[in-house]
Length: 560
Image 1 (cartoon, rainbow, N blue to C red):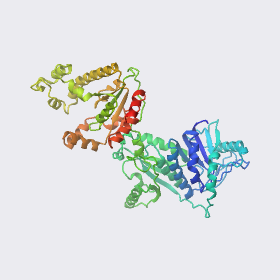
Image 2 (image 1 turned 90 degrees about the vertical axis):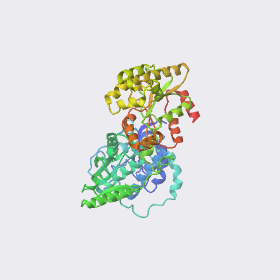
Image 3 (image 1 turned 180 degrees about the horizontal axis):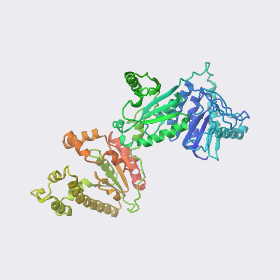
Image 4 (image 1 turned 30 degrees about the horizontal axis):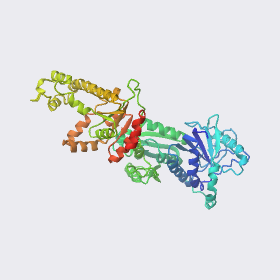
């Protein structure tokens, strides 16, 4: 069966039966669609009557809100790779049909709506009673979808009824709701806030329900730099501009009629405590206290309190021991550790073997412990800190040049260079520090290249260049991939003080003299973290993408 990049799923089941159908329907859809799946809701749509149905408005009711939450929750569990988006253009309190292609004021789609990705296939859960009607129903579905959305000219249609038929017995036990569906209270202006890093099911639920509640304007505060300092693996958070771009695209698809305002959030409150037009803030059980704090601030500012509309947190069925039970961006970021974030640069100037990994990270980050793990698995570890000591030895080229540049008063009684005295001469003086590194770094690089050449002669598959200054020294031209280890600054300070017996202030100065985690991550192909237990780090190393070296990759899997 063909696979399509983008599809649209037309759900026709009554709202009270949809909770049973969502998981199997999504599972079936995931066998046909591999990237983006739009969901269009039209409960009661009859595609088999013989006449062409038209899109209508469906009212915003409480059950619809519950279905949206259930849909995103099920999607996270059964088709987490799909970008699922529930479309709300046809959700409105009015009810009127489209008449042919004429533009009627109360019609949901006076003209077909353009989506970010053009659907190539339309799917439906419509229960086909007579298999002989299959072709007719597919054509009807295509025409219906074409009136709603701009689709690929070669739009395919598929019926998911064989899978859905299995649910009929369960659904027969469901009674029609005795009471009329409870209307959902909506508001002119709605506000939410968050990081919105790598939009996931919980974000989408929050955004979709907010769109459902908002009649006119949707204000979104997106955490900027000041609000990211305490985030787990903050170095892997997408740039603000990219997060905003992803939000705008999602919301334009979901409800294009809405006036969307996205603003940077530099404190926990933002515009929510000063905007007099806001009526509702959407929160979760976890953020409800934040919503109450917003209302306290609004009261101090003489503004009316916001309605707190609470949604449920979505459980993460795939969470690990270091991840939260709820679906969260921090969990998604932790799953990026050990994966290929950016493809390696062109390394055609390097021999394919040994495959050279450049491993770096700030002081206390645990990069050397990772290097030792790789060494235990057969990689050749090249310890640049050790080589740095070697280049200062009497008789070496660097030894003589350092004495010429900085004076013979640096010598100990045994004629070795006093590294502590040398450090005092360059500390705080960028010009003198550069004079020193211009002497030492090229000599270390020559030793590294020599060891790599020797490893090649010995038939070694992988070398790991363990170097704190890999990036600062521009040694990336010697390696196939750059791996960076990161930990929070406060954890690094703790480790340095315990390991080296220095004060917190000294540890902090040392870290601040190095490249920041974020700057290093910008150059990384792979990011790792030793923040958790050693077994967690070993799993990251196991996931690491040494794609160019199958022999090493195989050995890695067997050893861990």
